Structures are given as C-alpha cells and as structure tokens.
Image 1: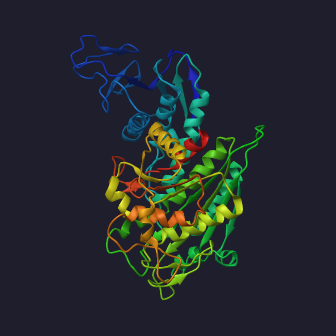
Image 2: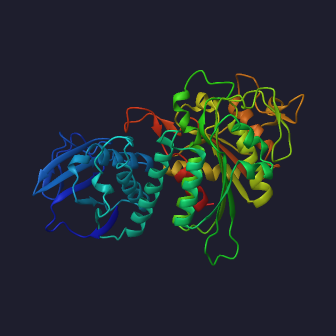
Image 3: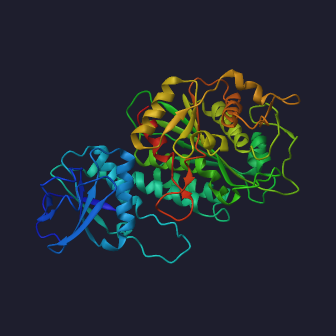
Length: 476
C-alpha cells in the first residue's frame, strides 16, 4: 500500500471512506457528503456501525466513530471495513480525513485498513486483497499533507502482519531455524546485525538452561541475538535490551499438557513480538540502540527430554532444580536475560513472554501482566500501552514470594508447585537472573497474544507487543 494526497473529488470514481462522528438518532439534519444525504433514522455515526450508498459512480462507505474514539477502536473499525467489505474495493479508493483528526487517528485508520488485508488461510487458495496489490495507492482527501503519518502507519501494519503470520503458521513450518532465518533476513533488509548461536555454539557459551528445554526435540535450538545501532548525531543515546520467549511448540515436556496443546504454536509470540519490534525500530530509524535476544527451541517429549527433579546449570552460574518441565519458558528467558546483561549491559531491559496461565486467570484476555520494581518504567510502559490499546497492569514483586523459588538441592527451583500466584513466582524466578538490574520489566502476555475475535473462526495471533515495545522505546 502507498498513499497520495488529494484536495478534491473532481472526476473521481471508486470507493470513498467517510469517517463520521456520532450526531443523534433523532437529529433532523442528515449526514451529507459528496452529494449523498443519509437520514439519522438510518445512520448517525454510532460506533461500530457503517452505511453503504452508491451515487455518482462512487460507493460511499460512512463509518461510525461514536462521540469519541480511542486508537485501538479506530484501528479495529478500519480493519473491519477493509476485511468485511473486501469485494467492494477496487483500484481507486479515497479516505476522507476529518479536519478534527489527529496524527494518531490518521495513523490508526490507515494501519487498520492495511491490517484488514491479513487472512488466516495461509494454505488455502485466496484472492489478494486490493489493498495488498503492489501498485495500490490509497488517496487521502485532506487539505493537510499526511504523507509522513501514512508511511509510519503502513510500516507499523506491515510489520504486524508479518508477526501475525509467524505466530499463526504451524510449528512444523515455524521452527527455531525458521525464526533465526527470518531474523537474519530482516536484519539484512532493515539494518541491524544478527548473530545466531546453534546448539553447539550455545553449549560452548554455557547456555545450559536454554539447551535443557530443547533436549527432547529434533529441531536445532537457535539463540538469536540482534543489535540495532542507529545513525544519529545525538551524542549519548540510550541502550535498551529486549528478551522474548521463542518456544516454537510446547508439549509441556514430560509434564505433558493435558489441555490446550492445540494452541501451543503461539508459545513463541513473545519472541515474535521482539522480532517484529526490532524490525519496526530499525525501519523507523529510531535514535536508540536496541539489543534483543530471542532464545528459540521446541519443548518436546523424547527419551532425551529433561526431567522433573533434574538439576541443571544456567548461563548465570546458578543451578536450577526442575520441578515441572512445563515451566520451561522461564528457563530460556533466564539464560537470555543473563547473557544480555553480562555481554551488552543495557540501561533498560524488557522481557516479554506467553509465560503463565496464572496471568490469564488474573486478567482474562484484556491486558498483560506487568512486573517491575522501577516505577518510572512501569508508568511509561502502561502509558504506551494505553495510547495504542495494548494494555498492561502491574502485579507485585514482593520478597514475600521469594520462598516460592527456594530449593533444598539447588540455588533455585523453576516452579513453586503451588496452585496460586503462578505469574508472580515465575516473575520472581526471572528476577533472580537479572542481577538486581535497576530498570528491568517483565511482561506476561499469555492472555493477549492469541485469542478469539471477529477476524477468524478459530483462535489466532494478535501481534500484541510489536507496537507496544516500539512505542515505549520511541518515547523512553
């Protein structure tokens, strides 16, 4: 998708998208645009409604926004129109931008329209959405030139679509090697360096907790390291570190899952969010250095699988007693965090993972769980999430929960064994490997990375975290 600015509709034939703020169901004055008059009895701009009318060789789609609208709702509405009304669209489409629209509302609308091109049927025959055609150009009807905001919106949506695909594609395709190849190709295109440690290299480095998780799989583990260094005149730039969980499929290991295994291809959604954020950060050329690590492996079942009661080593140097092999994500994150801190020393660290069902039990599917002892980081992450509709809410890291990871035989254990406070004890485990870093945050996205919505019949990816991490880093 590309965009161009136009100042009038003279000679235009095609589809016109007309966002409308709500008036009143009893309003005597109809909504009018381009010679089309719509009675309030039919349409008055109520949120999540739209009205289609044909006149002057044009299809007019009036889009209800309600009295006020937030970023996420606007993006969803635009996506709905693009997705549901695909057959109406042709080569010529105009988006009328209301004079009261902010840059963020323009961005949300255009991103949503592009996201509407995403279809879950990767292995079905399907027609390309008109908006996804190589030569498609969306006209923006406005006296203001929104070229910069439009380009940014397209870049955000393009990356999110790539991450939707990564998470939705099956685990026999999206293996650790598939993800490492994706990271290398992205780095080559967008301008960040990528280093991959395979199993042998990871063993030499001492990434034993990471390697333990992948022992039962025939898929080669891949420890992905990405580093983005901006070209900037700023004398001192901030250095941010990211770590994402990249379990390409999670059987639970020998503590095999008894329910929900069908959806465990999404257990790499945190890692995918970091991959997407890195691509987007580099594409937008943000003036911040970012180092990201995505440990990728498959937690499978075999005679070589690691076992409950095993004691394993970690890159940190601490020994870990394995209580439950289904608490594997925290093991690979522990090595990821330790490696990042020791070798790169970033000022701020954020890890993101589909880590615990406990976070889903607490928040459902509305927001991610946020853990940090740094209130400045907490506020900035929450503010970033609120602005774009990827919400977070804090849970405590009190030392009262420290006993949940204490082991009699090793330095720590990977699971409390209790049916309560699972998300918190997992966060306390990760905290142990951060060397008391003063600006570390952990995001448990188990409830928001994969779910149900109007855009498919089955559970599917949300791309949660891609825009959040970029937006947070951009405004840090």
